[in-house]
Image (cartoon, rainbow, N blue to C red):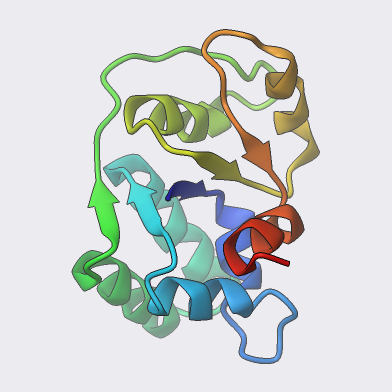
Length: 136
């Protein structure tokens, strides 16, 4: 199973005391493949540094760059499916380019993509992804 993880989901899964820490554990247990592009890595680094520290950002990016269940892919076509926040188009673009099973986000402005028939993107919240991954 291949997933693109929105930055907001990554950020909430970092602290061990977070209710979303299960995402890190599932990733570590190789329950899914994490699809990433250079553009997304850059956003991860920026937001991790801003929310936590550069040390945390370096550690997370080091894990992501060496883990066996990370797939690096660059989308070469821009669909421009999200109009409310154009910067977020990198996530659906990568989902399509990498043929990912899921785009995991807690951002509501991704919801209009659920109504698009083509290209079809399976958008799920972090809690929905947990049920899929853990079979709950």
